Amino acid sequence: MKTKDLLKLSTRMFKARTGRTVLTILGMGIGIGAILFLVGLGYGLQKVLLKTITTSDSLLTLDVSADPEKGSKLDEATVKSIENMEGAAEVVPIYDLQAQIRFQDIVTGGTAVVTKPSLLRLEGKKVVAGNENFEEKPRGMVISSAFSNLFNLSPEDLVGKSMKFSLFLPRAEGTEEKGEEKFEEKEVDSTYEVVGVVENEELSFFVSSEDLSSLLAGSEYSRLKVKSSSDSVLESLKSKLVEDNFIVSSLSDTVKEINKMFNVVKIVLALFGLLALLVSAIGMFNTMTVTLLERTKEIGIMKSIGASEKDILLIFLIESTLMGFLGGVSGVILGFISSLIVNLIVNAIAWKMGGQAFWLFSFPFWFIAFVIGFSTLIGFFTGLVPARRASVIDPLEALRAK
Image (cartoon, rainbow, N blue to C red; front, side, top):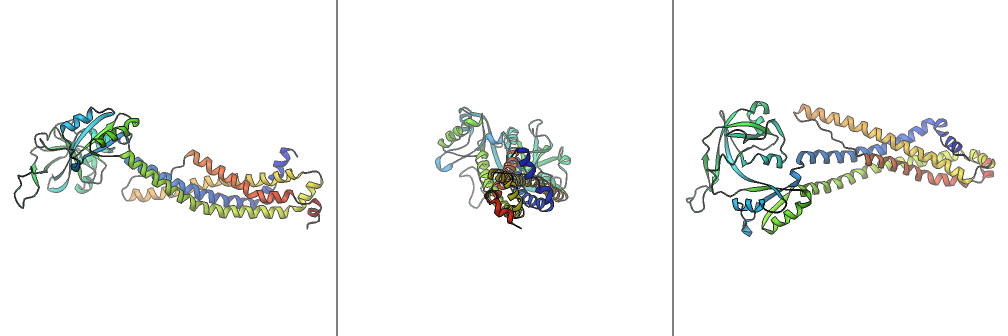
């Protein structure tokens, strides 16, 4: 039998039993759409989270802290030593200090991050107003967006405002009297001007370490940010720092753990979708079985005029495979439409609550191709048994069938 005739006979049921065929394809499409929707949600959440916490610079950066038990410390000599290490492109020393901030009549506590402007880039901080270079002008500061809610001002209105603050510095060992606090408050005489606002939910601000060098003279750094020259030397640089008795962590380690977690989430979500697909596959098998019973006499006629078992097998297999393919395509369309509706609803709610719009779903091209191929394969295997049964029917018995 010619290929043209095989295709014509295979697609005849799309015209003869249109309603049943469309419902069968739609059932398969719902199963595929459920898989695409759920796994796409997993990919989307992963992408949104990683985009929030990472930048290209932050993935190449190590967080270095002292380990008092092993005798390591963070001072100027340590910074120079790390700068000379192979693979170290940049070292940013940081003081994390408790502070009291005064703006007009409002006084609040927070964290003062005394460092260099490059820290904001290495930590992937997003600037929402102004700029991040607080060393551009004397006594400049960058504050977190959390102050915007506290002061009831927009980030844009905060830029240019003046603030004062005091720092709580640790007392030198042996100088504190009995019953005294281990920290003493040091007033910073100068007034600082807000040059930028970064997205952060914590009450913190960033100021230059050069402006406060006299006040912090002799104090050890709280931590260091060490940027490696490339991804290939990141692990070796980390190993060297660990060997020197420092506590080292990196955002890349966190990203790896997040990816592992989301891989599990995507598998679980896919399993839920597979349940819907299993029901659809059973429905398709039932449709092909009913088709076989309805076309028994037709099969007998085709065999009696010369159709081979292979021809009958191919007719049923092409029909079931085509239904599986169309089910996959319809599933992709349903998955896209449902994700679009859900995303619009979520963004509408987020917008009303003052949040930012984002795309909650992600559909890699390879995954779309995979689900279409997978549904086509299911269609093939679902029709395999009915096709085999149809191909071995005795033509005389088929012609006698009512």
